[in-house]
Each structure stands twice: as structure tokens, then as C-alpha cells.
Length: 347
Image 1 (cartoon, rainbow, N blue to C red):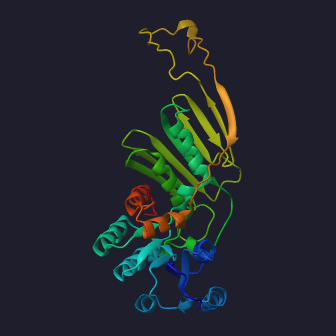
Image 2 (image 1 turned 120 degrees about the vertical axis):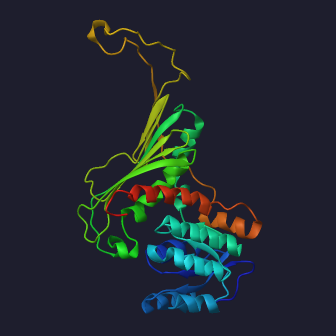
Image 3 (image 1 turned 90 degrees about the vertical axis):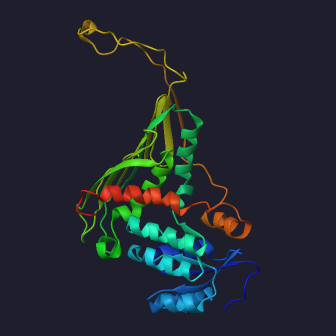
């Protein structure tokens, strides 16, 4: 095994699939401030790859890894059903934990994870890394700028037409479109609510994919402040639809995820008008001839973050800065996810 890097955060990655290897190992590999010292997987071929490429210790048994490894941080990148159990075990073994999305497959398990965090005094965070997505940051900036006035509605969409047949199509592993892709989008719009969610509704359907989970998701949530957000994430849409729609009292933004078109009135407030208290509509026409002048602008749907997920986590673990993604903030997301399942056959 390679020598210990000075003051580096030592990491054990649990699960070497798409998320574990292609996302977390890829993000940590070669950094001076992190060092992958251990990996865990059930497949010997993947462990051999890790030994060869990373020069780290390898384990097939999660319990043995926790007993023998001295790593400081554990990254849980296993199947969704295992996230809560393994996170709690790692916390109780004295490790800080990064857990992949979804944080858990039930709100009860989310609360158990937070309780284990409190009990152990360790750091627990969730890889909801799309809070750093350039399109999300752009939308957030536009909303906060006031250009659209008082924002009352945000829609986030993800569209495609394709089939899959891996474990994400089976409920017993915690699969499904809501736990997989849509949970990132739900997390984004919950952050854009600007207030805690107080109501949520979902429509989950299985259309073309095998297995026993949803491949089409719609989620609607309302915040304490009255703002409404919506997510539509589907594997059954053969034409492109907007990735973002934001409506405000002064204008609207529509984006395909790369370019935003914004149409807005420069007037901060429209002139006041009063209703005409009469059962007759003048000239049998709607409206009263008002012409509202709009300005338009087109811009990239992109705003860069100065840091990535692991930069922020290093700041917390080594510099004592506040945690970038708290489990409590993700609990709001998971509450919306749980509410969205109610009344469907995928609860």
C-alpha cells in the first residue's frame, strides 16, 4: 500500500459500482488532501482492480472492514436498501460518513441515521452533489436576483426514452426512478422552496421498464411560504421538454439545461387596477386593452461553484467549517419523497 499522505483524510469506499468507482473514487483519486486506503466490494474482479490501480487494502466483508481499517471517512456507495444500515454501523464504529443518495429508503431510517450521528458525534453527510450543479446554481441566482419578481412556481424536468434491466428496476434493492434520478431533482427544488415543505403529492407509474418499480415520476410540493415546486423525471418521454421553468410576478424563465430564455417586465410593480363590480363584460371581451411591455434576455444556464463536494467536506473535517450538506436538509427532501409515494403502489 502507498505511504500515508500528510494530514490527508483517509477514506474507505464501500461499493465499487457506477457511483463508488466512477463518481467517488474518480473524485478522490490523486487528491493530496484525501487518500483512499480501503475499499469494500463483493466482486473479486473489482477488488483486484482497486488493488492494482489504487494500491489499497480490499475487503469483501463490511464488518471486517470496520474492525480492521483505520480510515477516518467511510463512503457508502452500495445499493439503496443498504444505505441506512451501513451508515449507522460506520458511525458507531467511530467513522465520519458520506452516504450516496437516496439517504435511505424510509423516513424512519433517515431519523435513525441522524440519531446515530448525534449519539456518536461523528459527521454524517449525503452526496446530494447536484446542489453544486451549474444549472441549479444559475436558477438559484436568477431567483435571488429578483429579476422575476416574487417567484411562486418552479418546475424541474428530466426527460428521456430508454429502458434498463439492472438492480435499479427492483424494489428489493431500493431501485426506481424516484430513488435514482428524481431524488437529485427533488433535492434541488426543495432547496429552492425558500421555506420548509408542508405538503407534497406524487404520481408514480411503471410504463415500459421491467421489474416492480416506477419509471415515470411527478412530484409536487408546497412550501410554508406558499411557493410550489414540481419535478417530472421520466424514462418514457421521446421528445425534449424544458429542464427548468420558473414563474414569478414579473416574468418567466425557461431553460433546456444549457440556455435560459428570460422574459420579464422592467416595472417592479404593475400599475394597480380594480375589479369592475358588474355582471356584464364590456364588449364581451376578456381584458381591457392593457399592453404590458416585456424585455427578453438569453444567457447560459450555468454558474460555476468555486468548490466541489469533497472540497467543502475537507473544510468541515479539517478546518471546522459548517457542513455543506446537512442530514437535516436532506430529511426535508426525503419527507417529500415519502409523501410522493403515498397513495401509489410504489409506497
